[in-house]
Structures are given as C-alpha cells and as structure tokens.
Length: 415
Image 1 (tube, rainbow, N blue to C red):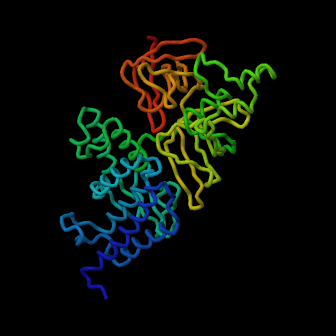
Image 2: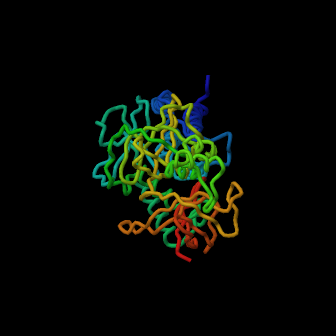
Image 3: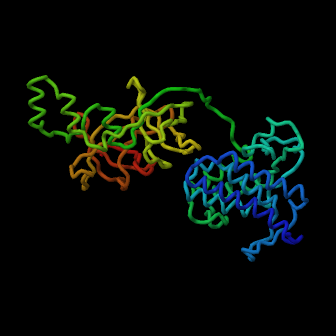
C-alpha cells in the first residue's frame, strides 16, 4: 500500500502527468482527446474525495521547488489549456507554461460561484470531457467547480501597465525570450481567455460553407491572381510563345503550363467554416492534401468563382483526432495587386533581377498606408526597390507592418 505521506504525491502525479500529455498534444497543435480530459478531471476528483486536494506536497523529483497542492496543479493544467495553445508559437507556449507555474497560487477553485462579479467567471464540470466553460452557461451542481481568478487578473493588468510604462519583460520577471510588444499582446490574450478582459466582440461571425482555393506562397498567389506564369519585365517571348501568338493570337494554356514553375502552382481546396470582416476560420477536410502550415504564414484564398481573392495570416492551427486541419486567419484588408519588384543590389531566388510581389493600396478608412508584400528578409531601412506594373516606379521601404515565415509586409514611399 501507499503510506499516508505519499498519498498526496500520488494524486498530484496523476494530475501532473495527464497535463504533460495534454501539453504534448498542444506542441504539435493537436486537439486534446476527450478521454484525456476525463482522466484529468477524475484524477482531481479522486484527490478531492480523499480530502487531499489542498494538502501540501513536497516534490521529491525537484526538492528546490516550493510546496504545491493537487488543486494548484489542476488549476495549472486548466489555465494552460485555456490559453488557446493553438494560437501560440512554441516560444509563447513555453513562456505561458513557465508563467502559469509562478502564478498558480493566485488562483483558487471553489464549489460555489462568486457573487457580484463584473467580469466573466469560468467553471469546470468534473464528470465532463472538456475544459473550462463560461460559468453563466452552467447551473450550480455538486460536480461543478468555479475558478477564482480575480487576483490573477489584477496581476495581469499590473504587468501590462508595467510594460507600457517602459519596463522590460525581464524586469517584470517575465523572461527575455518574448519582447515588448509581443509580450504585452500575449498577456492581453491570457487576460481575455482567463478573465474576460476586453472580450466584447465587435464583429459578428457568420457561418459559411464556402469552398476556396488556397495558395501557400507569394509565387503561387501571384500566379493565381494573374493567371499566367511570371515573366521578367521587358523579356522577349520564347520561340514557342511566338509560335502561339502567330497561330492563336495569344499564348496557349499548354505553353503557360510548361512555363509554370512548381512553386507557382501550389494550390489546395479548403472550406471556410465562418468569417467576419477581419477573420476567417478555414478547415481542410482532406488531411492527406494539407501542406505544412505555421503561425504567421501568409496564405492566399480565392473563391471558387475566382472573383474574390483574400490574403490572410495564420493565427491559429488545430488538428483534430481524424487529422483534419483547422486554421484561423487574420485577414489583410484590400485586394492584392500582382506586380514585379526588384530589390536594388539583390537578385531574386531564381537568379533573375525581378521577383513576384504583391502591392496593397492604402486604406484611408482604417488608416493603413500603401504596403508591399515581399519575400522574407527583404526589408532594410530605406532600401531602394523598383516596382514594375506598366512602367518602373522607384520606391523605398520605410518600415515593416507585418512579417511571417514566408513574407514581409512593408510600408513604402516614392523615392
């Protein structure tokens, strides 16, 4: 049998190791199966039933760590899963794991809802198969526990205020791997998910079953906007193209396909589940067709009719148990214009002077300036760039508005 001193540790380990399995799912953007949620809740409920949920536990594996409890460890798992891991990069997720261990003592778990709360309160159902839920959607019952996160919410507000007053994340014991303003944005996200801070939805999401063609690179987007292979400005027609022009009066589709590079042709069919003005949730129902996706990746979405083309940046990734991929996109407003761009002093990836680029016109209503979407690592302060649409337009890069693994979105000014 297990001696009385070891019993709290056994219960804690069951909760802790279940949480670690769930974290492994998070790291590869897999949804946590219902069975693991059931194991987590049952492990905590067993500790509570034994009267050991709040007993201090000495961690024999890490003797330098402060004493903890089954309740604190259970709350850590709940908070991590409520941090929207599918919206976090690996660096952000690791920061959240570290912060939650530090902040868990500020949270509490109660059997009754807190009265006179202005903010949202979260609750968990111990015999359920999912994570925390909005307490307003639940009736008080013996199997419901309420999360008291008031002190945690107050601390998050203090940390955000500290960052805005010029303190660094390191000075606030937040670490140095995530810098301001990314650190501030992450704290605000956690505040919204845990405490309902600033979660009033401005835009309504509309359900949809729209099919779209998704392109995964600037080259593919350029091709599917123009409908033809990319050509260097001023380049002469090839012999085969000249023959097409003489015979058909145009370059044939067969010739275009022969000129089309593999990177220009990448395309997948996705389904849009819902959308708002600034966001889209897409789903790929053919797991075998999905190419590699990453946070902050630029995607191009063209409707089946070909009349509308969106640009979006991946914000969330989640893979369900069947392997289907869902993504959340932040839409870049405006219609992209496919152009050619030459970075002065640089050579394009295929050895040519000009490469594919996308020009986004200014949006006066949203106070967004004219921007140029280029390949990664293109930006240098005041770098000279020649744009070619109908003629050469010299510009310079003035700043970076957005960037990701496959693009940079730069503000420009005429040179």
